[in-house]
Length: 129
Image 1 (cartoon, rainbow, N blue to C red):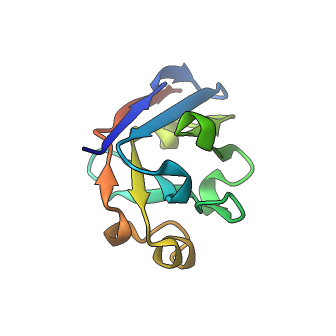
Image 2 (cartoon, rainbow, N blue to C red; image 1 turned 90 degrees about the vertical axis):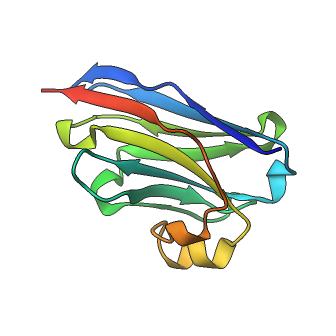
Image 3 (tube, helix red, strand yellow; image 1 turned 30 degrees about the vertical axis):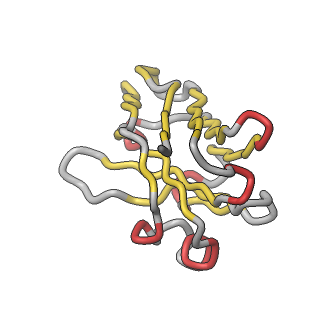
C-alpha cells in the first residue's frame, strides 16, 4: 500500500521560510517522478514544482522561481520543497504527488495533474502579511 505523507507546513510571516517534506512508502521511490501542487481557497489546484526520477529535470511555477527549491533524496524516500521569501499569495494547501509518467509531468511544466497516481492529504501553509 502506497502512502504519501507531507509535513512541515504552518504559519509564517511575509518574507519568512518553510521547508516542506514528503515521504513516500510502498513503492520503489527512486524510479518515480514527484510534484508539489497547491490549492488556495476558491482557486484551482496548480503545479508548483516537479522533479523527475533521477533529479536531472526540475521545474517551477514562474511565480515561485528563485524563491522555491525542490530536491529528492532517494535514500530517505523523501522530496523537499524549500520555500523562501514567502508571500501572502503563497498561502494554500500544498499537496505532494507521485507519478511514473515523467513525460507528462515534465512537458506540462508540472501542470499535468492527470498524471499523478498517488496523492498526499495535503498540508496548510499560511503566510501572514
